[in-house]
Image (cartoon, rainbow, N blue to C red; front, top):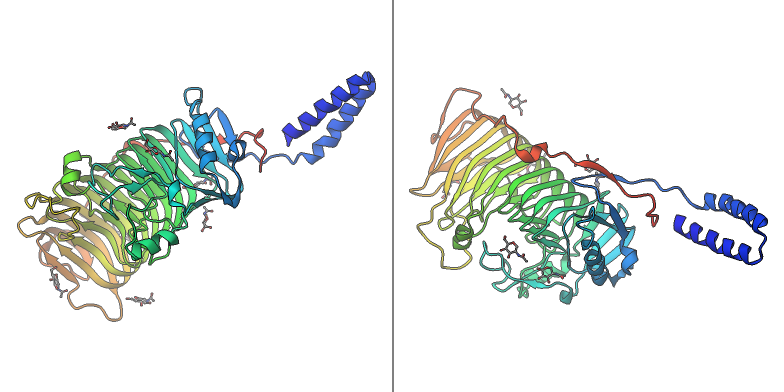
Amino acid sequence: MEYLCLKSRNSQVIEMISITYILLGLVLLSLHAVECKPKTTPLDTIEFPALNCRKHSAVLTDFGGVGDGKTSNTKAFASAIDKLSGLASDGGAMLIVPPGKWLTGSFNLTSHFTLYIHKDAVLLGSQDESEWPNLPVLPSYGRGRDAPGGRLSSLIFGTNLTDIVVTGGNGTIDGQGAYWWEKFHKKKLDATRPYLIEIMYSNQIQISNLTLINSPSWNVHPIYSSDVIIQGLTILAPVDSPNTDGINPDSCTNTRIEDCYIVSGDDCIAVKSGWDQYGIKVGMPTQQLVIRRLTCISPDSATIALGSEMSGGIQDVRIEDITAINTESGVRIKTAVGRGAFVRDIHVRRMVMKTMKYVFWMTGAYGSHPDPGYDPKALPEIKGINYRDIVAENVTYSARLDGINNDPFTGICISNVTITLTEKPKKLQWNCTDVEGVTSNVTPPACDLLSKKKADECPFPEDRLPIEDVKLKSCSIASSITLF
Ligand SMILES: *[C@@H]1O[C@H](CO)[C@@H](O)[C@H](O)[C@H]1NC(C)=O
Ligand SMILES: *[C@@H]1O[C@H](CO)[C@@H](O)[C@H](O)[C@H]1NC(C)=O
Ligand SMILES: *[C@@H]1O[C@H](CO)[C@@H](O)[C@H](O)[C@H]1NC(C)=O
Ligand SMILES: *[C@@H]1O[C@H](CO)[C@@H](O)[C@H](O)[C@H]1NC(C)=O
Ligand SMILES: *[C@@H]1O[C@H](CO)[C@@H](O)[C@H](O)[C@H]1NC(C)=O
Ligand SMILES: *[C@@H]1O[C@H](CO)[C@@H](O)[C@H](O)[C@H]1NC(C)=O
Ligand SMILES: *[C@@H]1O[C@H](CO)[C@@H](O)[C@H](O)[C@H]1NC(C)=O
């Protein structure tokens, strides 16, 4: 608007000069300026926290974007980001998605870049499969999860990048997943379904303040990356939708996930690191992970799953202040013979749960192999799994802990846990096989394999992970951008 006023003022000046009433012209000009001002609604500067602020900004409509919910914006996103990538070494750039409904297929991010989705903007995932490039399978998985062939690129994809921010004032990304769920159920998929956001081989990543709904499959998948902050996400999918995991940190180092609310048809968070022989070969663990202030609703899955794909290893995970409602299990370990690697140094504290099938669940016989080529001698090491300060209500089974024969899960420590049961609880509340460890101050009392110890055990680490000390800067959308 400011721009439009400026333009009309100039044309007025030219008109004035041409009739040479310069004095009158100036009077008119100042009158015009006065007249113009009230028409320019002063822009409320939008402020938001980010890893880095950018020197340059542009709006999707500058690149031909049309927010009518029908026109494809795949090309507009591609040309905008292509153009803005040229500014990476000059202070970086931000692309603003303004209010409107923006239908799009997959597009790729660039380094030193912010994608800002306005609170009244909705990105709509295209259902035209030609708008989703086919990518090679992930090296640590060896195949696509839905089909042995390739996998479709995520709606928002980035690889080999540094310093990327995907954020918004709670703007929405709607994957329009029903199309893909139906294909999945009818076994008509010939490539793996796309995710909403996937970032590979990158560092300094922020994904925050967004609402993600109806993903075709997983929602957020950082993989082979480090220094990742995910915060303030609302993730919603029907509880019977297939594989709509919330956030899946996979072979990532130094990750912080906080203040998220997730309702989904699969695990709210699934911590992963590759699958059987493929994951063992790549050998990239997920480590230095903190998950805090999560609320999860997932009647058929875990609040936080560790695995089942954990063949690069999972270690040094801190989980705290978690609420689970009407969810199948809490922090669950899923593994199998053939996975190899380890899950170790896991610390969980302060969980509140209501209406749970299991409070504690560990599964050593998860099965699910990419192909018959896995090594039956590759046994996972599950060791040092700590839980404390947990209150759970309306529970069916307190614990089902199934280790692996000749490969017991060891160093399990559970303390200060109060579980109240449903009206019709199962008789065997703690069903334990092939596990070793200690418990204290736990009701109902634990199985004999977890021998009792004095109270107040299972310490939580007192040091901080490097990602916990990363502070976000306060950035704002320049008031010269006036398309709202
Ligand atoms: C994004 O980048 C990947 C890897 O470079 C490429 O295969 C894919 O085609 C790109 N996607 C789009 C939409 O251009
Ligand atoms: C991205 O990084 C990976 C791992 O470092 C490397 O193997 C791959 O070649 C890189 N890809 C591109 C397009 O630079
Ligand atoms: C974001 O939007 C979702 C969906 O409308 C809403 O449930 C949630 O409360 C909002 N979050 C914030 C922080 O405003
Ligand atoms: C983003 O979400 C965080 C919570 O993770 C909240 O503290 C902050 O106020 C939100 N910022 C904006 C701009 O919505
Ligand atoms: C036990 O857990 C409860 C609930 O989380 C907490 O309020 C209490 O402080 C804990 N007690 C000890 C001794 O840590
Ligand atoms: C308790 O859990 C059962 C399922 O085991 C559920 O049907 C019931 O609604 C729950 N009760 C309450 C009060 O949440
Ligand atoms: C206990 O767990 C074992 C091994 O996982 C299982 O076979 C058995 O059925 C369970 N028992 C009960 C009573 O749930």
